[in-house]
Length: 455
View 1 (cartoon, one colour):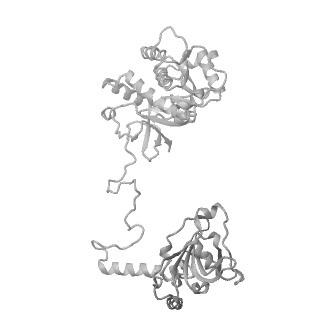
View 2: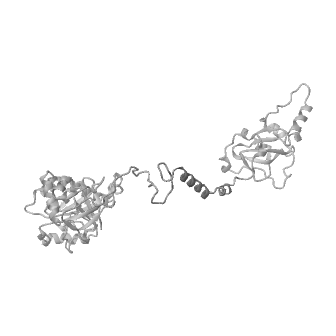
View 3: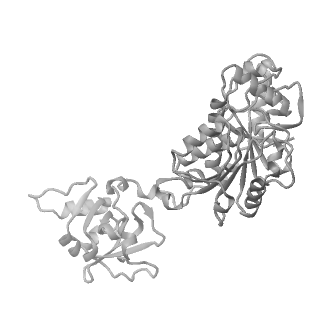
């Protein structure tokens, strides 16, 4: 009876570890309880060996997918008269006891056959496939892989493009609806996903024209030209803005907010100032004089103190100070910032940032004061980066060397000691620019502080 199964196509399920095999029965060894399959497939993939042998103990389920015609006729002829023939359809199942009875010949029938072994967790990851999908026409499965490179080589790309261009020239030439490829200058422009596809007017990069150029020009990151202005025109612009309602207090608040925002970015932004980093709060030394520029620095220090920055404000004692300075100082005293009037009380160790508001566009005699020279020496020896707010044009060589400088509204023609120049929007209306003879279009876009590059 063991020989009756030779030539049958069967599916052997060896569990999750070994997987499922399909093939044609080539040998059944009843003595050693083994069965061999030729032209085997493992989990739907053709095996590299011509034959595999299974032990009865490794077989969980055996399904007969196809019985040879000769074996069917012989089985029908041997059946008693009161029995029926086994069904000739695919999918007969054989239990473990029947597998043991139908085991056949020796596993050494072929020298290069292999016996599947349980090799560990790698094979355990393979799941059993649907055995029934391999039940028909196993012989028709190709032995070689599809040659993608050879098939692609049959495609003549140049000939296809030439045919497309020929058709386009025949359809419409350069008329409406034509799709000629043309030269690179004639082709329609391509756009990114974030670019505007609607046609617009050409960009005008010189949109700010001043009646009295300051002798230097800057440009923004987008290429817009920002000319410098003289200090006289700058003073006139602020005076007209104040007449229209942009008071000194409003200007101080705007400049303080912009300067503090820039300072927070220089200090590290969210990487430095976050609730998980409260033990490393940045330290900023604020050097201010008794003038409007000093009031701008005090306003900046108040906003920084509100953002958990340790502020040390240096402001010398004076008998009489301007009212804006007094008002800003009263507000600063409501914060946790520290105020000192002597340079000796400033930190001996380097701080994270020094903000310089000592200098003034006018009253140059302050630079001869002992407190001014002592503050300049301390800043230059502290080795901390310096941010200057609204520095004057005539900056002496003995002054504080800044790494960045923040200008208000429109820039002045600053020297090399000013470092990299930034511009902030202090809220001057466009009609105010027009009244002083400046053709103005805002270069700020979506920001209040932008970098400027020398041209």
